[in-house]
Length: 351
Image 1 (cartoon, rainbow, N blue to C red):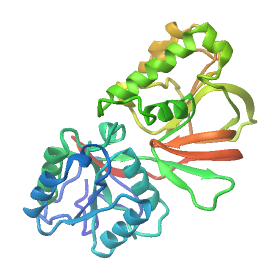
Image 2: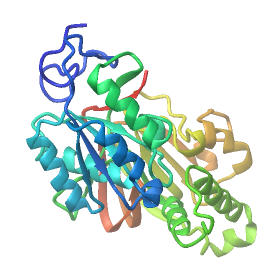
Image 3: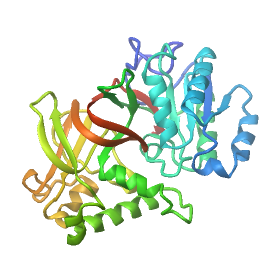
Image 4: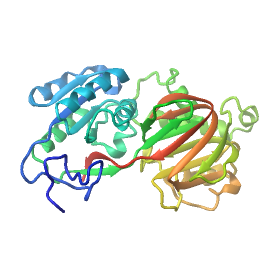
């Protein structure tokens, strides 16, 4: 491995080219760090006194507190002007999505910074896969120590992200988890007051999923279909002729694991995007659940039973309904949504 130059660790030939996922500065140069905090997400709602106290010990670290996409965009512009090479995202999945979108559009940073995600949101699905584990305060301290004197406790992980382009929109969205159909219904249930205890983490999404699975298994509710309405899509994978199908849900992701460690994809092809769809009335659901939960291919999770999973380079969905990107909801009314993989983004993770 060649010794890195003055650019962020292991950049090679410009945008997002990495030789190795484990990099360090042997010359002792310290990374310029910017911390972007969303004070209205997850654990940050209870106060940021500990985060602020930690940052007082690091006067060279830039810190901005923003809760709107416009404010986050302005913070990232300030970071770029100040030469920030590592952006720490102290917020939820939606904050990570807003940051990825702002950076992904290529109008702020000459060279995209590395990202370090803290588990500071309500669900924190993205940080649990490509972030630094532990409490936000402990993870932040660990990241700042690494930025001062890099070592092998953390590694730089290249991971492609999703570029989501709606046919009616000029600008693309960027994220790591796309979902439609029952997934959007689950998010709406999750935010509709079904969490009176204010639980954070992966438990509430898991309970919401269980509630929806029970609705699917209940014959009366399947006949009614108001609980979990089907999603009609025309789907094209890798430019192939589109296929029309009624789906229970569709998901596309570059995450290795979702909440509760779920890996609902079992495709065998060589492609950066995990695509999974389940038909509106899936057969043998209980016996197919191991594949849906852990990515274990079995004979029940097959197309003839309503289960589809592939690794692809591009997905085109002609759909009429909502979709979610990292927990944020968007409308796609009778339009085509195209999902592609980007060049890898660099995430700081445990080695």
